[in-house]
Length: 502
Image 1 (tube, helix red, strand yellow):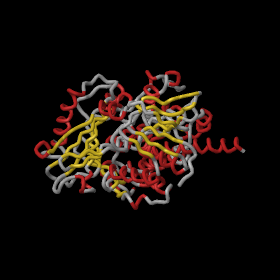
Image 2: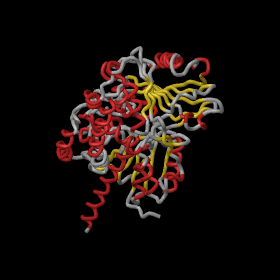
Image 3: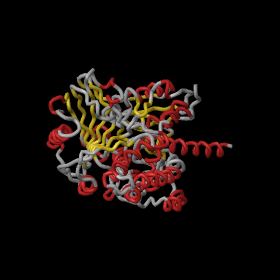
Image 4: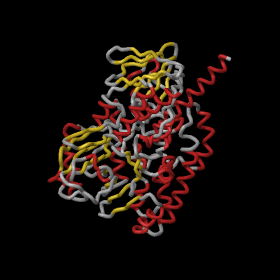
């Protein structure tokens, strides 16, 4: 058994909380992991309806080594429990013109797809990849698992950030190299996967292009839910105490130190360190004592920009659509203007763009024989918009079904089974997400690195954040790296204690 170094309470069992709990347990702490839902996984819940299975959360696995690390902490191999299967194509883009573009694992195959639209953009894509690699080598390899608790750490990186033109947007970088308007859409879409508008998200996130090239794009066989189940088993094997259906009322502070947490039913969990996987704005506003409920940051709450909301539609079909890829990005007639409606004007337009997930393209266990399982994600304004989702939810469901039936899923209206949906209201209720935002605060430059929520509270030295709203950001690689940052901070704490003790 590991010798205890003290008690760690982790609030929230999303991927960041799971990773933080495992890392702390491997370092010898007694770890209690608390979550308000009935199962761990955060947004990665699983719904089952009428023989169909639906992953409710993230469906794309990149940087798989970050999961491998969690199993290797305990001398185990991830591949003994979960298969990560490579996809081809990674993503299929369906444009409003009826044209399709397959973004594929090999550069050669991707170039062949590019040539069908614009031969001149093949060279531009090569330059985009080189730029993405340069950003990756700084933004991911050097900064993603490093804390930005001090402004001096940010200052030290300013020459690199300026060299990488991080003050530009992802779309700004892409448009420098890619000229065809539809390819510009395809290659600038990545910020939406982490909650950002491509036209305002810092170009640091252009590193995702090279990240995918470096490790690939995968699907966890059995679904993200199976991956979570195996992580649950790993947590239990390693001795982490998991307590579910338990919500947090307050983080208890004494003499500028977190001393424990109190649940909504009055149960108190003492702690030497508290790690928050919950949405940082929610933690500060709803869980912290009034004297500690604010933090020093550039943007006041009124000016803080949040990610878009998500409308997620789930359904099965009584037939298979064998020509539909695992991941399809269904693009509407507008791009930049639609994003402005969602992020800036906060209105729900008549048109939309969609992300379509068909897991049965790779894993038949998601549906009965001869059927398909689907998940459709539609970016929408967060709850700062004036939208009545009780009225709008059913209407948007039918609009999406009609649009898909008229295009890539013919006769969907006749073969659809058990449709249901989630709205930003559900994200607020189920995940305590501020304004129902799908990915916490938006990844703009002035909300990144030191400007983002810190991984350690500036005033409470034993309160940490491993979450989408903290550095380095949202997405599975982001939150898993966030847990690594917290571990590095705690290693620093341990080293300081050892010096003091000596």
